[in-house]
Length: 132
Image 1 (cartoon, rainbow, N blue to C red):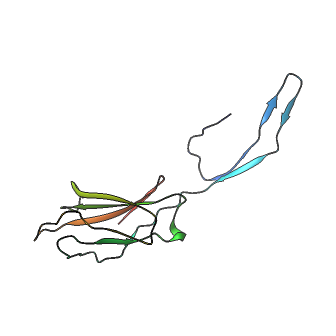
Image 2 (image 1 turned 120 degrees about the vertical axis):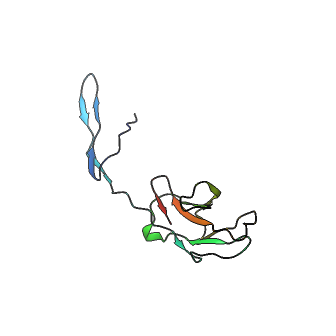
């Protein structure tokens, strides 16, 4: 048997199984589980300066989120490059799996001279995200 519950608030929950047969009713021992508060995903720390001026293909780099501020599960780092602070439309979006201490992308095409570009990196897992 499988039971799916809606999101539970943080706390300790207790459960047991009751079996019923034609001749008897029995109860299992009481078990429990704990639902913790969501661990906020830390914001990735920039490894390169905010104002990257390398032409024609800047290297955009961030440090891995340290272990003490990481939730359970794999993290992906999504880089976005755009011409405005709204990040719309994104000229480049690329995701990298969390398998290194430093994450870097470099645009595959040359960027235009005398143009201001904005970039951000977002750490994402299945539960939450942290944006820089």
